[in-house]
Length: 322
Ligand SMILES: NC(=O)c1ccc[n+]([C@@H]2O[C@H](COP(=O)([O-])OP(=O)(O)OC[C@H]3O[C@@H](n4cnc5c(N)ncnc54)[C@H](OP(=O)(O)O)[C@@H]3O)[C@@H](O)[C@H]2O)c1
Image (tube, rainbow, N blue to C red; front, side, top):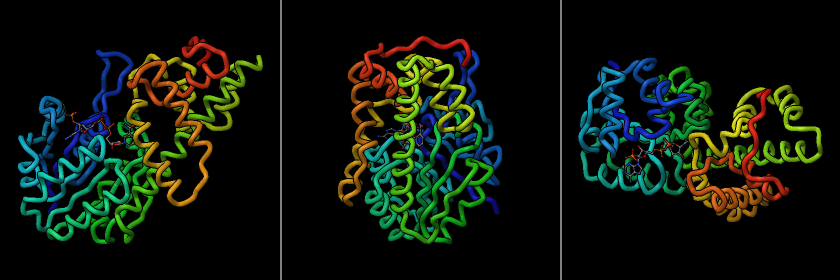
């Protein structure tokens, strides 16, 4: 029999609102994909701290039940899937879950937290007779919409198998399968994935500034980059930068949130003796973007910071040929 699923956390990933303008917004986050493409028992149970978001999504999707509290969401489901902002949100949520009878339930966490915290939560979940899968994702809201996320899954093989039908083709295009490994290992790899992303943003930003300053121009660099790296993430950040969205669009990830995460990754790198100079440079540019354009600037504001460091204005002029 198909399991009952509750989803906790209707943020950009759970909800995804994508659209060039307010009247063309499209909502199709992980929740819609679970409902449309996953073999789950209907209705899908939704819970969000800000109730209106869950209420509006349930009206949009149909086949949803609104849970009025976290205990109510947990009681109504066999699989409880979380996608929350940060460690504090995950900790607060599990503080409400641990006093409940959770025997036989499966908790899936797609939030980005630290490996140690994930292991500690997973251990308590398992001691209470439930199962836990860490399922952090790579890829932003646009990729959540198109089911092209990459999901890194770890936990016992049995627990990962229980959510396998909801991963590939349902919420993501690829699974990095760490089944049989401790849940925190998925988070360690996810944070290293973030390292790759930050390094990519830094590279794309520096390449465009170099092109502009050298006189070859960002249009030509765009042609080269599109030929060499036509897929996301290069293509995504390339577009964000040259279109000017890096300083004027809706943020995919705010610099203030990114800095918190980057600092966690730097701590992990330093603790194991790994030298990560590219990452330290990107960290400084995130700080510069935050100082110049505010905490809600998108992470691709790194481009603005590299421009400033090169004597250019933070904001660029959108180019005709993008
Ligand atoms: N956005 C991305 O590009 C991206 C990509 C890959 C992975 N991720 C990871 O996916 C997770 C979700 O990201 P997102 O962009 O969807 O985040 P988001 O838009 O900031 O949404 C955060 C969600 O967490 C809830 N929340 C925050 N603090 C809470 C608390 N103390 N108690 C209960 N709920 C709380 C929010 O509820 P309210 O609506 O009430 O605020 C909201 O539902 C994060 O861990 C992020 O690192 C994000």
